[in-house]
Length: 226
Image (cartoon, rainbow, N blue to C red; front, side, top):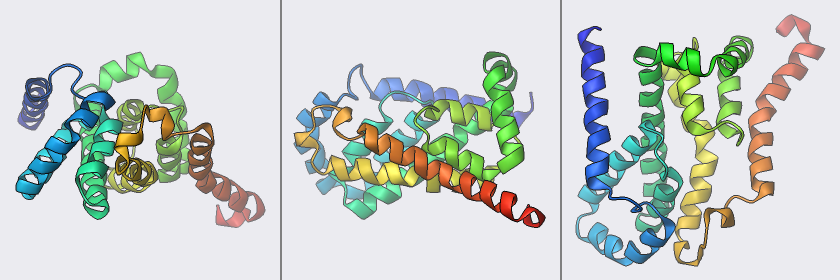
């Protein structure tokens, strides 16, 4: 294993240990966040830059390891920061975390991912070869494909890191906006089901499929442009 891979592995291990040191069990629950909302809001008011930096780092680690709680952290961002600040923090933190997870899959977990998800890997590889970035865009918006699985499988495809970054950032933005907006009324929420209705999930899926449908129609009626 080359030195960059060793450093990358050490950094991931350190972040993994840090997250458990900073976050006790059940700290990322809707009830806990609602009870600590005013205290956290006061701390953000006293130290806005430090609070934003800590929130960003925490979100990156949670996203990179696909730990439960990313949706709740997005709600918290909506409750603690302005809408614009929340979009910037969550959008870039979630994309950075997803990219780190993809790189870990590509350089550290390749053999394990190929063995564990061989069937899904074949489907995703074919989709990326056929539709490229459009396929990743669709996967990001489809509820049937978990966040962590997209990261792991994308690491074994031919997608470049820069392409993976910008497609993920754009595709994850609609859900980010919805959860941040819901976080502004976090005190009224009883569960995450209050946010994502079946109709909303269907809308996300349709949005993800639109580029693929448009590409298919273009190739069907204009074969020369395919």
